[in-house]
Length: 321
Image 1 (cartoon, one colour):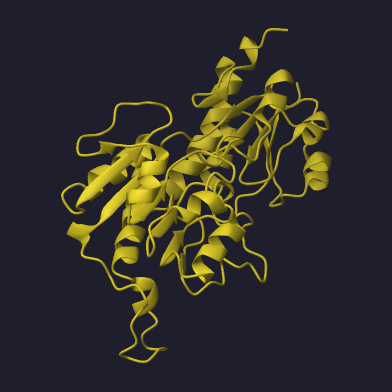
Image 2 (tube, one colour):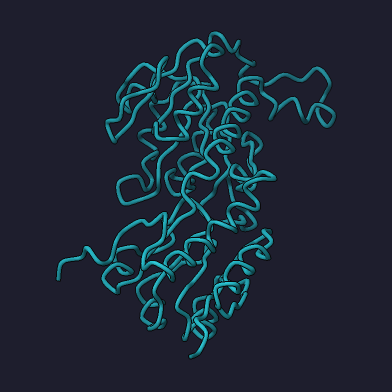
């Protein structure tokens, strides 16, 4: 019997060795492509039963070119690069690494919040500015700051726990209607945005959240406030955010995600002086660098053994014809 085939599309800077070892121990033939190009993926994975994906788009057209595919296993908690509906009707599982990096993302969010409040975006460049230069919007006292959290799942709740006792007020909006953590005052989305000094986004990217933070919503933010996004770049209208920064309405934005990654030359947000940008590393730690790779491969192994992965997004077997 021929060995099942597992294909890695893209891993960026992560070492796939542990994942490859898990897959090979299960009898898989493993191929590593390091590409997001659909034609290259289709050619190399035409006989694959498992596709291990970083950020490569997996749409209906690509799925049609992979007739033996049974699972798409993501190298992240997010899965917006996959057409989940198209995968489901083709009996293809979609799996994620789950909450492996929730603590790291929450910690990164809190670090960005502190940097925003203390205006490290400005003062870290003091050696290249005049020593006595000061920003238009001065640093805020942390105890006088209102932090607004948009989304209070695992990560948003951990951010709230980190901020509790440090900021003056924590406002929270959760579209899923979950009970909010202690110390978080429930509010509508409009209230969170209009009343907060720092607004932090913790939502998945889907049809209801794409460009949720558009020009109209950004215009309601407090003058001199900050927007933090560690979720997905597409939740924010990039041009509208750049306009709000250019006008001086917002003091700054702290971003770990962009629409296009890595950014293209001329990207307004990536090159904006009032943007504190980190290169999509909120998830990263010495632990998660290993665990992401291990969990991605473990989902494939469990699917191969039992017919279902641990962290599935949908169950194709539940689709009613």
